[in-house]
Length: 201
Length: 201
DNA sequence: TGTACATCAGTGAACGCGCGTTCACTGATGTAC
DNA sequence: TGTACATCAGTGAACGCGCGTTCACTGATGTAC
Image 1: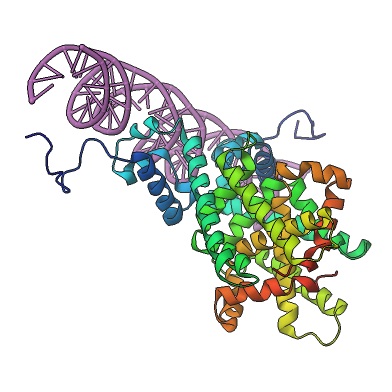
Image 2 (image 1 turned 180 degrees about the vertical axis):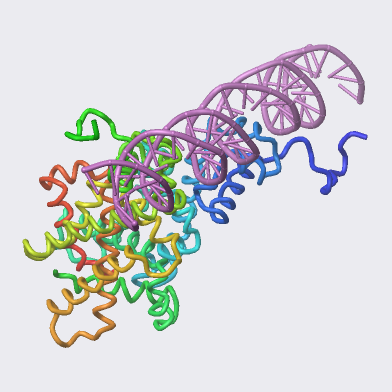
Protein backbone atom coordinates (compact mmCIF):
# COMPACT_ATOMS: atom_id res chain seq x y z
CA UNK A 1 0.00 0.00 0.00
CA UNK A 2 1.71 3.11 -1.23
CA UNK A 3 0.58 6.16 0.71
CA UNK A 4 -2.66 6.52 -1.12
CA UNK A 5 -5.63 8.31 0.51
CA UNK A 6 -3.53 10.40 2.93
CA UNK A 7 -4.87 9.37 6.32
CA UNK A 8 -5.27 12.64 8.25
CA UNK A 9 -4.87 10.85 11.60
CA UNK A 10 -1.52 9.32 10.76
CA UNK A 11 1.32 11.70 11.41
CA UNK A 12 3.48 11.58 8.31
CA UNK A 13 7.21 11.36 8.53
CA UNK A 14 7.53 14.60 6.63
CA UNK A 15 5.75 17.56 8.06
CA UNK A 16 4.77 19.34 4.90
CA UNK A 17 5.58 22.90 5.85
CA UNK A 18 7.64 22.67 8.99
CA UNK A 19 9.17 26.10 8.55
CA UNK A 20 5.80 27.74 8.87
CA UNK A 21 4.85 25.30 11.59
CA UNK A 22 7.89 26.30 13.60
CA UNK A 23 7.15 30.00 13.18
CA UNK A 24 3.62 29.49 14.39
CA UNK A 25 4.81 27.36 17.30
CA UNK A 26 7.30 30.06 18.24
CA UNK A 27 4.64 32.77 18.21
CA UNK A 28 2.31 30.60 20.26
CA UNK A 29 5.00 30.08 22.90
CA UNK A 30 5.98 33.74 22.94
CA UNK A 31 2.43 34.90 23.53
CA UNK A 32 1.62 32.12 25.97
CA UNK A 33 4.75 32.11 28.12
CA UNK A 34 6.66 35.22 27.19
CA UNK A 35 9.75 35.84 25.08
CA UNK A 36 12.01 34.53 27.83
CA UNK A 37 10.50 31.07 27.53
CA UNK A 38 11.33 30.75 23.87
CA UNK A 39 13.92 28.05 23.26
CA UNK A 40 14.58 26.07 20.12
CA UNK A 41 13.75 22.90 21.98
CA UNK A 42 10.44 24.32 23.17
CA UNK A 43 9.56 25.35 19.64
CA UNK A 44 10.34 21.87 18.34
CA UNK A 45 8.28 20.35 21.14
CA UNK A 46 5.37 22.66 20.38
CA UNK A 47 5.56 21.73 16.70
CA UNK A 48 5.64 18.03 17.59
CA UNK A 49 9.06 17.42 16.15
CA UNK A 50 12.48 16.34 17.36
CA UNK A 51 14.92 18.92 18.79
CA UNK A 52 17.18 18.63 15.77
CA UNK A 53 14.51 19.16 13.14
CA UNK A 54 14.51 22.98 13.23
CA UNK A 55 18.11 23.02 12.08
CA UNK A 56 16.96 21.99 8.62
CA UNK A 57 15.11 25.30 8.38
CA UNK A 58 17.03 27.77 10.52
CA UNK A 59 20.74 28.17 10.99
CA UNK A 60 20.36 28.78 14.72
CA UNK A 61 18.08 30.26 17.32
CA UNK A 62 18.78 33.82 16.30
CA UNK A 63 17.75 33.13 12.75
CA UNK A 64 14.43 31.71 13.92
CA UNK A 65 13.87 34.73 16.14
CA UNK A 66 14.61 36.99 13.22
CA UNK A 67 12.09 35.14 11.09
CA UNK A 68 9.48 35.49 13.81
CA UNK A 69 10.13 39.21 13.97
CA UNK A 70 9.87 39.44 10.20
CA UNK A 71 6.54 37.65 10.18
CA UNK A 72 5.36 40.02 12.91
CA UNK A 73 6.21 43.06 10.82
CA UNK A 74 4.39 41.50 7.86
CA UNK A 75 1.26 41.12 9.95
CA UNK A 76 1.53 44.59 11.40
CA UNK A 77 1.81 46.05 7.92
CA UNK A 78 -1.22 44.02 6.87
CA UNK A 79 -3.25 45.41 9.76
CA UNK A 80 -2.15 48.93 8.94
CA UNK A 81 -3.06 48.54 5.29
CA UNK A 82 -6.54 47.44 6.21
CA UNK A 83 -6.94 50.42 8.52
CA UNK A 84 -5.55 52.83 5.93
CA UNK A 85 -8.12 51.85 3.35
CA UNK A 86 -11.11 51.79 5.60
CA UNK A 87 -11.50 54.49 8.22
CA UNK A 88 -10.82 58.16 8.77
CA UNK A 89 -8.05 60.05 10.59
CA UNK A 90 -6.43 58.37 13.53
CA UNK A 91 -7.45 54.95 12.31
CA UNK A 92 -3.93 53.91 11.52
CA UNK A 93 -2.66 54.91 14.93
CA UNK A 94 -5.44 52.99 16.56
CA UNK A 95 -4.72 49.96 14.38
CA UNK A 96 -1.04 50.11 15.27
CA UNK A 97 -1.70 50.17 18.98
CA UNK A 98 -4.33 47.49 18.65
CA UNK A 99 -1.87 45.17 16.97
CA UNK A 100 0.60 45.71 19.79
CA UNK A 101 -2.12 45.12 22.35
CA UNK A 102 -3.29 41.87 20.77
CA UNK A 103 0.27 40.57 20.30
CA UNK A 104 2.20 42.19 23.12
CA UNK A 105 5.01 39.68 23.39
CA UNK A 106 5.42 39.37 19.64
CA UNK A 107 5.56 43.15 19.41
CA UNK A 108 8.31 43.16 22.02
CA UNK A 109 10.32 40.59 20.09
CA UNK A 110 9.92 42.63 16.93
CA UNK A 111 11.25 45.69 18.65
CA UNK A 112 14.16 43.86 20.25
CA UNK A 113 15.19 42.34 16.95
CA UNK A 114 15.00 45.71 15.24
CA UNK A 115 17.38 47.13 17.74
CA UNK A 116 19.91 44.34 17.92
CA UNK A 117 20.32 43.57 14.23
CA UNK A 118 22.77 45.94 12.62
CA UNK A 119 22.97 44.02 9.38
CA UNK A 120 21.95 44.98 5.91
CA UNK A 121 18.36 45.72 4.98
CA UNK A 122 16.41 42.54 5.50
CA UNK A 123 12.87 42.05 4.36
CA UNK A 124 11.73 43.19 7.75
CA UNK A 125 13.55 46.46 7.48
CA UNK A 126 12.29 47.02 3.99
CA UNK A 127 8.75 46.51 5.15
CA UNK A 128 9.39 48.85 8.05
CA UNK A 129 10.78 51.40 5.63
CA UNK A 130 7.73 51.01 3.46
CA UNK A 131 5.48 51.72 6.39
CA UNK A 132 7.52 54.72 7.40
CA UNK A 133 7.52 56.11 3.86
CA UNK A 134 3.76 55.64 3.66
CA UNK A 135 3.39 57.52 6.92
CA UNK A 136 5.43 60.40 5.56
CA UNK A 137 3.48 60.74 2.36
CA UNK A 138 0.28 60.62 4.35
CA UNK A 139 1.49 63.47 6.51
CA UNK A 140 2.64 65.39 3.45
CA UNK A 141 -0.74 65.02 1.83
CA UNK A 142 -2.70 66.08 4.88
CA UNK A 143 -0.50 69.10 5.60
CA UNK A 144 -0.33 72.15 3.38
CA UNK A 145 2.32 72.69 0.76
CA UNK A 146 4.18 74.99 3.10
CA UNK A 147 5.78 72.18 5.07
CA UNK A 148 9.40 71.31 4.45
CA UNK A 149 10.72 67.81 3.94
CA UNK A 150 12.44 68.08 7.28
CA UNK A 151 9.18 68.99 8.99
CA UNK A 152 7.46 66.02 7.42
CA UNK A 153 10.27 63.71 8.50
CA UNK A 154 10.20 65.01 12.04
CA UNK A 155 6.43 64.83 12.24
CA UNK A 156 6.57 61.24 11.02
CA UNK A 157 9.08 60.34 13.70
CA UNK A 158 6.96 62.11 16.29
CA UNK A 159 3.95 60.16 15.14
CA UNK A 160 5.74 56.86 15.20
CA UNK A 161 7.13 57.61 18.66
CA UNK A 162 3.69 58.42 19.96
CA UNK A 163 2.06 55.22 18.76
CA UNK A 164 4.98 53.07 19.79
CA UNK A 165 5.06 54.64 23.22
CA UNK A 166 1.33 54.45 23.64
CA UNK A 167 1.33 50.84 22.48
CA UNK A 168 3.63 49.91 25.33
CA UNK A 169 2.33 52.21 28.00
CA UNK A 170 -1.35 51.55 27.51
CA UNK A 171 -0.91 48.03 28.84
CA UNK A 172 -0.04 49.32 32.30
CA UNK A 173 -2.65 48.32 34.83
CA UNK A 174 -2.68 51.83 36.13
CA UNK A 175 -4.83 52.98 33.21
CA UNK A 176 -7.51 50.33 33.42
CA UNK A 177 -10.12 52.58 35.08
CA UNK A 178 -9.61 55.40 32.60
CA UNK A 179 -9.82 52.99 29.67
CA UNK A 180 -13.11 51.62 30.93
CA UNK A 181 -14.46 55.09 31.56
CA UNK A 182 -13.70 56.05 27.98
CA UNK A 183 -15.43 52.97 26.62
CA UNK A 184 -12.59 50.68 25.60
CA UNK A 185 -9.04 50.52 24.40
CA UNK A 186 -9.60 51.97 20.96
CA UNK A 187 -11.45 54.98 22.29
CA UNK A 188 -8.71 55.51 24.84
CA UNK A 189 -6.00 55.41 22.20
CA UNK A 190 -7.93 57.74 19.97
CA UNK A 191 -8.46 60.20 22.81
CA UNK A 192 -4.81 60.21 23.81
CA UNK A 193 -3.64 60.74 20.24
CA UNK A 194 -6.04 63.66 19.95
CA UNK A 195 -4.24 65.35 22.83
CA UNK A 196 -0.79 65.32 21.33
CA UNK A 197 -1.20 68.93 20.28
CA UNK A 198 -1.46 70.25 23.82
CA UNK A 199 2.13 69.54 24.69
CA UNK A 200 4.20 72.65 25.08
CA UNK A 201 6.10 72.12 28.32
CA UNK B 1 46.64 42.35 65.30
CA UNK B 2 43.00 43.18 65.29
CA UNK B 3 41.92 44.62 61.96
CA UNK B 4 43.38 48.00 62.64
CA UNK B 5 44.38 50.29 59.73
CA UNK B 6 42.05 48.68 57.18
CA UNK B 7 44.40 47.57 54.44
CA UNK B 8 42.69 48.62 51.20
CA UNK B 9 44.46 45.89 49.22
CA UNK B 10 43.25 43.06 51.41
CA UNK B 11 39.81 41.86 50.47
CA UNK B 12 37.89 41.60 53.71
CA UNK B 13 35.69 38.65 54.43
CA UNK B 14 32.69 40.89 54.73
CA UNK B 15 31.96 43.08 51.81
CA UNK B 16 30.58 46.10 53.57
CA UNK B 17 27.62 46.91 51.37
CA UNK B 18 27.15 43.89 49.19
CA UNK B 19 23.56 44.71 48.40
CA UNK B 20 24.57 47.89 46.66
CA UNK B 21 27.58 46.13 45.16
CA UNK B 22 25.32 43.52 43.63
CA UNK B 23 23.00 46.15 42.21
CA UNK B 24 25.89 47.95 40.60
CA UNK B 25 27.32 44.70 39.28
CA UNK B 26 23.94 43.85 37.80
CA UNK B 27 23.65 47.21 36.07
CA UNK B 28 27.17 46.90 34.72
CA UNK B 29 26.39 43.50 33.23
CA UNK B 30 23.09 44.65 31.80
CA UNK B 31 24.64 47.59 30.02
CA UNK B 32 27.73 45.69 28.93
CA UNK B 33 26.18 42.42 27.74
CA UNK B 34 22.46 43.03 27.59
CA UNK B 35 19.59 42.00 29.84
CA UNK B 36 19.66 38.44 28.49
CA UNK B 37 23.13 37.92 29.95
CA UNK B 38 22.04 38.75 33.45
CA UNK B 39 22.22 35.74 35.74
CA UNK B 40 22.58 35.60 39.48
CA UNK B 41 25.87 33.77 39.07
CA UNK B 42 27.19 36.41 36.71
CA UNK B 43 26.24 39.13 39.14
CA UNK B 44 28.01 37.35 41.98
CA UNK B 45 31.06 36.86 39.76
CA UNK B 46 31.07 40.52 38.77
CA UNK B 47 30.84 41.52 42.41
CA UNK B 48 33.69 39.16 43.30
CA UNK B 49 31.66 36.98 45.57
CA UNK B 50 30.50 33.38 45.73
CA UNK B 51 27.34 32.28 43.88
CA UNK B 52 25.46 31.80 47.12
CA UNK B 53 26.21 35.20 48.59
CA UNK B 54 23.42 37.12 46.83
CA UNK B 55 20.85 34.98 48.61
CA UNK B 56 21.60 36.83 51.81
CA UNK B 57 20.29 40.00 50.17
CA UNK B 58 17.70 38.91 47.62
CA UNK B 59 15.13 36.15 47.81
CA UNK B 60 15.74 35.13 44.22
CA UNK B 61 16.67 36.41 40.82
CA UNK B 62 13.39 38.19 40.28
CA UNK B 63 13.79 40.16 43.47
CA UNK B 64 17.21 41.35 42.37
CA UNK B 65 15.83 42.33 38.99
CA UNK B 66 13.06 44.25 40.69
CA UNK B 67 15.59 46.08 42.84
CA UNK B 68 17.60 46.98 39.75
CA UNK B 69 14.48 48.36 38.12
CA UNK B 70 13.67 50.31 41.24
CA UNK B 71 17.12 51.85 41.35
CA UNK B 72 16.74 52.75 37.68
CA UNK B 73 13.52 54.63 38.36
CA UNK B 74 15.21 56.43 41.23
CA UNK B 75 17.95 57.63 38.91
CA UNK B 76 15.53 58.58 36.17
CA UNK B 77 13.54 60.67 38.62
CA UNK B 78 16.76 62.30 39.80
CA UNK B 79 17.67 63.24 36.22
CA UNK B 80 14.20 64.61 35.62
CA UNK B 81 14.28 66.69 38.79
CA UNK B 82 17.53 68.29 37.72
CA UNK B 83 16.10 69.09 34.30
CA UNK B 84 12.87 70.43 35.81
CA UNK B 85 14.71 72.97 37.92
CA UNK B 86 17.12 74.16 35.32
CA UNK B 87 15.92 74.69 31.77
CA UNK B 88 12.90 75.81 29.81
CA UNK B 89 10.17 73.93 27.98
CA UNK B 90 11.01 70.57 26.52
CA UNK B 91 13.91 70.14 28.90
CA UNK B 92 12.24 67.34 30.80
CA UNK B 93 11.42 65.42 27.67
CA UNK B 94 14.98 65.77 26.49
CA UNK B 95 16.26 64.64 29.88
CA UNK B 96 13.97 61.62 29.83
CA UNK B 97 15.15 60.50 26.43
CA UNK B 98 18.75 61.21 27.33
CA UNK B 99 18.49 58.94 30.33
CA UNK B 100 17.11 56.16 28.18
CA UNK B 101 19.85 56.73 25.60
CA UNK B 102 22.64 56.59 28.17
CA UNK B 103 21.20 53.51 29.90
CA UNK B 104 19.35 51.70 27.14
CA UNK B 105 19.46 48.23 28.59
CA UNK B 106 18.61 49.41 32.09
CA UNK B 107 15.70 51.35 30.68
CA UNK B 108 14.49 48.20 28.96
CA UNK B 109 14.66 46.23 32.21
CA UNK B 110 12.74 48.97 33.98
CA UNK B 111 10.01 48.81 31.41
CA UNK B 112 9.81 45.02 31.43
CA UNK B 113 9.56 44.94 35.22
CA UNK B 114 6.85 47.58 35.16
CA UNK B 115 4.80 45.46 32.87
CA UNK B 116 5.27 42.08 34.49
CA UNK B 117 4.76 43.01 38.13
CA UNK B 118 1.11 43.12 38.99
CA UNK B 119 1.70 43.41 42.72
CA UNK B 120 0.90 46.17 45.10
CA UNK B 121 2.45 49.61 44.80
CA UNK B 122 6.15 49.15 45.40
CA UNK B 123 8.54 52.02 45.86
CA UNK B 124 9.17 51.94 42.14
CA UNK B 125 5.55 52.42 41.32
CA UNK B 126 5.20 55.15 43.86
CA UNK B 127 8.11 56.98 42.31
CA UNK B 128 6.63 56.44 38.90
CA UNK B 129 3.35 57.84 40.18
CA UNK B 130 5.13 60.83 41.60
CA UNK B 131 6.70 61.55 38.25
CA UNK B 132 3.40 61.19 36.49
CA UNK B 133 1.64 63.48 38.96
CA UNK B 134 4.38 66.07 38.52
CA UNK B 135 3.92 65.89 34.78
CA UNK B 136 0.20 66.47 35.14
CA UNK B 137 0.52 69.50 37.37
CA UNK B 138 3.10 70.89 34.98
CA UNK B 139 0.69 70.54 32.11
CA UNK B 140 -2.12 72.03 34.17
CA UNK B 141 0.00 75.05 35.01
CA UNK B 142 1.11 75.67 31.44
CA UNK B 143 -2.38 75.30 29.99
CA UNK B 144 -5.19 77.75 30.58
CA UNK B 145 -7.87 77.24 33.19
CA UNK B 146 -10.26 76.03 30.55
CA UNK B 147 -8.79 72.52 30.44
CA UNK B 148 -10.62 69.70 32.14
CA UNK B 149 -8.99 67.15 34.41
CA UNK B 150 -9.59 64.55 31.74
CA UNK B 151 -7.80 66.64 29.17
CA UNK B 152 -4.84 67.06 31.47
CA UNK B 153 -4.72 63.34 32.15
CA UNK B 154 -4.88 62.49 28.46
CA UNK B 155 -2.28 65.08 27.58
CA UNK B 156 0.01 63.67 30.25
CA UNK B 157 -0.39 60.18 28.84
CA UNK B 158 0.24 61.49 25.35
CA UNK B 159 3.37 63.22 26.56
CA UNK B 160 4.64 60.17 28.34
CA UNK B 161 3.93 58.00 25.31
CA UNK B 162 5.84 60.36 23.08
CA UNK B 163 8.98 60.46 25.19
CA UNK B 164 8.89 56.73 25.87
CA UNK B 165 8.43 55.97 22.20
CA UNK B 166 11.07 58.42 21.12
CA UNK B 167 13.46 57.08 23.73
CA UNK B 168 13.27 53.65 22.14
CA UNK B 169 12.99 54.61 18.51
CA UNK B 170 15.74 57.19 18.46
CA UNK B 171 18.33 54.46 18.95
CA UNK B 172 17.56 52.94 15.55
CA UNK B 173 20.52 53.24 13.23
CA UNK B 174 18.23 54.50 10.54
CA UNK B 175 18.17 57.97 12.13
CA UNK B 176 21.88 58.48 12.54
CA UNK B 177 22.28 60.80 9.55
CA UNK B 178 19.35 62.98 10.58
CA UNK B 179 20.62 63.18 14.14
CA UNK B 180 24.02 64.33 12.96
CA UNK B 181 22.49 66.85 10.58
CA UNK B 182 20.53 68.36 13.44
CA UNK B 183 23.60 68.64 15.63
CA UNK B 184 23.23 65.83 18.14
CA UNK B 185 20.78 63.67 20.00
CA UNK B 186 19.34 66.35 22.24
CA UNK B 187 18.63 68.68 19.35
CA UNK B 188 17.02 65.81 17.48
CA UNK B 189 14.78 64.93 20.40
CA UNK B 190 13.82 68.54 20.90
CA UNK B 191 12.98 68.94 17.22
CA UNK B 192 10.84 65.83 17.14
CA UNK B 193 8.91 66.82 20.26
CA UNK B 194 8.27 70.23 18.70
CA UNK B 195 6.48 68.50 15.84
CA UNK B 196 3.96 66.62 17.89
CA UNK B 197 1.35 69.24 17.12
CA UNK B 198 1.28 68.57 13.40
CA UNK B 199 -0.34 65.18 13.74
CA UNK B 200 -3.88 65.11 12.49
CA UNK B 201 -4.02 62.04 10.30
C1' DT C 1 38.56 45.81 79.71
C1' DG C 2 37.66 40.81 78.80
C1' DT C 3 35.16 37.09 77.67
C1' DA C 4 31.14 34.04 76.08
C1' DC C 5 28.02 33.70 72.82
C1' DA C 6 24.38 34.81 69.32
C1' DT C 7 23.97 36.55 64.94
C1' DC C 8 25.29 37.96 60.60
C1' DA C 9 27.41 37.54 55.96
C1' DG C 10 30.25 35.13 53.62
C1' DT C 11 32.23 30.20 51.31
C1' DG C 12 32.46 26.33 48.15
C1' DA C 13 30.69 22.07 46.75
C1' DA C 14 26.84 19.92 44.99
C1' DC C 15 22.03 19.01 42.98
C1' DG C 16 19.19 18.56 38.95
C1' DC C 17 17.72 20.87 34.83
C1' DG C 18 16.96 22.61 30.25
C1' DC C 19 19.47 24.55 26.90
C1' DG C 20 21.90 24.95 21.93
C1' DT C 21 24.02 22.23 18.98
C1' DT C 22 26.13 18.10 16.64
C1' DC C 23 26.16 13.50 14.93
C1' DA C 24 25.32 9.34 12.45
C1' DC C 25 21.24 7.53 11.10
C1' DT C 26 16.91 6.53 8.30
C1' DG C 27 12.48 7.09 6.05
C1' DA C 28 10.32 9.48 2.14
C1' DT C 29 10.48 11.84 -2.14
C1' DG C 30 11.70 13.08 -6.76
C1' DT C 31 14.29 12.36 -10.94
C1' DA C 32 16.99 10.06 -14.88
C1' DC C 33 17.01 6.49 -17.74
C1' DT D 1 5.96 1.63 -16.21
C1' DG D 2 10.01 0.19 -13.27
C1' DT D 3 14.11 0.68 -11.15
C1' DA D 4 18.49 2.89 -9.22
C1' DC D 5 19.95 6.46 -6.89
C1' DA D 6 20.66 11.25 -5.10
C1' DT D 7 18.64 14.33 -2.17
C1' DC D 8 15.78 15.96 1.23
C1' DA D 9 13.68 16.24 5.92
C1' DG D 10 13.13 13.95 9.62
C1' DT D 11 14.97 10.96 14.25
C1' DG D 12 16.99 10.25 18.77
C1' DA D 13 20.96 9.97 21.48
C1' DA D 14 24.63 12.48 23.14
C1' DC D 15 27.94 16.47 24.28
C1' DG D 16 29.24 20.11 27.37
C1' DC D 17 27.58 24.17 29.64
C1' DG D 18 25.79 27.64 32.69
C1' DC D 19 22.01 28.25 35.32
C1' DG D 20 19.12 28.84 39.97
C1' DT D 21 19.15 27.19 44.21
C1' DT D 22 20.33 24.57 48.53
C1' DC D 23 23.35 22.96 52.05
C1' DA D 24 26.43 22.54 55.86
C1' DC D 25 30.09 25.21 56.93
C1' DT D 26 33.02 29.18 58.87
C1' DG D 27 34.99 33.70 59.60
C1' DA D 28 33.81 38.26 61.44
C1' DT D 29 31.05 41.28 64.15
C1' DG D 30 28.39 43.04 67.91
C1' DT D 31 26.39 42.66 72.45
C1' DA D 32 25.57 41.34 77.52
C1' DC D 33 27.64 40.84 81.57
